[in-house]
Each structure stands twice: as structure tokens, then as C-alpha cells.
Image (cartoon, rainbow, N blue to C red; front, side, top):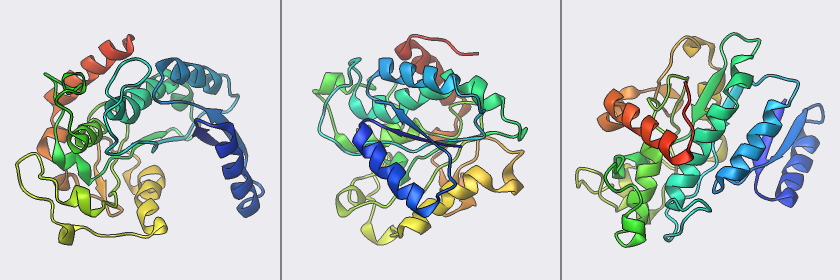
Length: 248
């Protein structure tokens, strides 16, 4: 079973058609989900929880990047809302389906990026003063730090993201420029390789809270604040508050 999520039915239909052409035997479930709307996320989760099949692997991949300031339906800065709060809520709501996996080792993979170097979680002002102090790359960096491998106790991982010249010249959280020469440009297969390793590599099935880069476990490549347990607890509590629901 493969669940394909998207905001528009026509987009899902095109994707399904392409997958069916390449893999006719694939069993697909199209799912309408707008990560910028907590109501849509809850509706999608309810649909997933009614599936007869359990979920072996969840890959939280959808995101927006460096967009002009705008807010989600619920009033959150869009990058934080779409890239973190939506997936956070969706993951926790369908967790019973994941824990029901007959593999005995279900996995949750959060796709982050090198952009997490740009900013930690701005706990005192995660909304950028309602946009008045907004910086699109810091907002993106914060959202990708929020996809850190420590935001829950499930199996998670990062994927290296291909950046353009604009983000390459943004200073990281320590003020150090991110030079374009330091980036590794990837093809689509190369870029998706880390997804596959994180989701299916049997050698890491008993490990949790991992950061993967270039298809290898590499926690040393993550910023310390992205792996900090105290930050993770604060983010978890903040996320529960913002989505209006507590999770055990």
C-alpha cells in the first residue's frame, strides 16, 4: 500500500497515472491533505485510520521553502505550519495505524535539509512578530530544525536538500556564510536515496533519533540544537499547544 497525499485531486490523479504506468501492481490510496489547515489534517488522518491495512513506513516529505510571509488557515507562519505543525499533527493522529504494523519495526522519516543550519527554533518568537520581523530563510531554517530527529521517540531522519545560490549565501545560525561551493548537487535518484535508506535499511531498524546525510547515518552533521533533548521537549510541548491536542 502506498498513500499519496496532495492538496488537489487533479495532481493526485496525474501522479497515480504515472505510477500505475511504471508499476501496474502498486496498490495506491490517494489522500487529500492540506498541511496548512489543521482541519484538513484531522480529516485526512481520520480517513487513514479507517484503512484496513496498517502503515509500515511514513515519510513526511511535503514542504514549502523560503516563501514570502503568509499565514496558514489557523494563523501560523506558513513554513512552520506546513513543514512542521501539519506533519506533527498528522503523524500523531495516525500513530495507532503505524504501531499496528506487522513488521514489528515501523518507521517514521522526517525529511529536513541543510537549511536547518540557518536557524534553531525561535521559541520566543516562532511567528516572526506576525510577519513584521520575517526572514524567509530563517523561517525555512526554523521549520527544518523542527523536523529534527529528536522531536519524538520514533525513527526519524534527514535528507540532504539541493539548495540554490540564494540560500547558499545565507549565513547559518552562527553567522557563517553558506558557500555555494560547499553544496553537493544531486539528481532525483541521488536525492531520494536517503529516503530509501531511512525507510528500509535493515541495519538501522532498531535505532531511533537518527540524522542521515548522503544515505549514511551522520548525527555529527546535524547542528547540536537540532539534537538537543531539552529543545525537543520544548518543541513537543509548544506543538501540542498550537495544534490544541496532547499526545502520550
